[in-house]
Image (cartoon, rainbow, N blue to C red; front, side, top):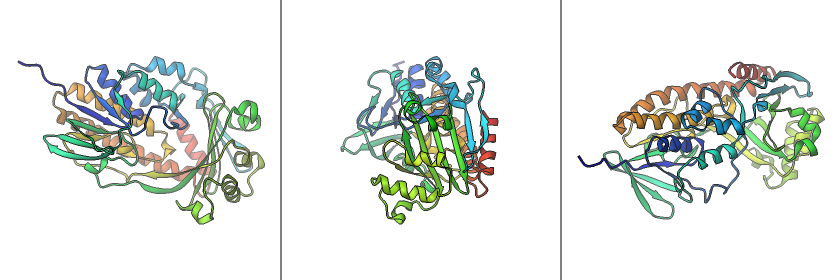
Amino acid sequence: MPPTTPPRIAIIGAGPGGLTCARVLQRHGLPVTVLDRDASAGARPQGGTLDLHAATGQAALRTAGLYEEFAALARPEGQEMRLYDRAATLLFRHAPAADVTERPEIDRGELRRLLLDSLTPGTVRWGHYLRALHPLGDGRHKAEFDDGHTEEFDLVIGADGAWSRVRPLLSDATPHYSGVTFVEFAFDDADARHPAIAHLVGGGSMMASAADRALIVQRNSRGHLRGYAAFRGSEDWALEAGVTMTDTGAVRAALLGRFAGWDDRLLALLTDNDGGFANRPLFALPVPHTWAHTPGVTLLGDAAHLMTPFSGMGANLAMLDGSDLALALVRHPDRDAALRAYEAVLLPRSADAAEAAARGLANALAPDAPEGSLRHLRMTAGNA
């Protein structure tokens, strides 16, 4: 009997979920190609810090054979959480013992490097922006890229995030604005240059909230703090306020107006930050987001279940998705059976997490904040 030709598997998107999937596939001898729109691995910043949960993100890394490398990079002290009211009164503090590693933090960039370095050289092909997928029958698809070239694959995995180009083959759903916007700010070398703010934040993350507004800050590695002014309002709030995001002074003034009456120690987050501000409106897919099984194509991560960050599950689920999908492909010789088995687990799990994220958002930015925020953090700490 002639040897079986391995399937041509394409993962669209080199985020944590797609890279985890590729790593597990390669670990079991299945070839895979990852195609990403970025020009290179370092083409853009990867964002802030992630808390990887023992049952999801950490479990996926164990399946990928990367847990020990992760543990060497992780920051257990980052599990600390603090809640303040608008007067900067500390209402709640959760600080697990040093040997508790249920949800240690790791910078997104460090996690991505860990996953990339684990792959066979050449696995990720940069500068490949998917324009469209064309079904060819028998589960095969032709991928068309922005530079005009095309390639055929036996299986296409959409790991390409919120605005996935793969998702339209499976679903008509599009992300909707959640009603909440984050405006990002940052501090560099905070312990030395901004000691009062570093003390306010502590070793992990802090939130101060009141009446549909919050200031949220997360400690990253090497003394970097990344924060967000969060509020309910129009997606076009800046346009309606007559400011552009490149005008740092105007954005700062608009934010100070929204947080008028807050303690000066908290307002320093908006007045003393290094650099400017970035607008981050929060989007989510409908809940539940489901699709009819389609041979030769499936989704993982934000492409499948985009949700707001208030469940802390986005990247964790993406990595678990990637691990579960890869294992299904390894264990089921029939690809269609593998996809069905994977999606039977993915879809209900995603719905549960997205519902939790919606509840978390409702609590964290509730009209009765900070009481709602306290409910959210106690629930989060209790699930740690």
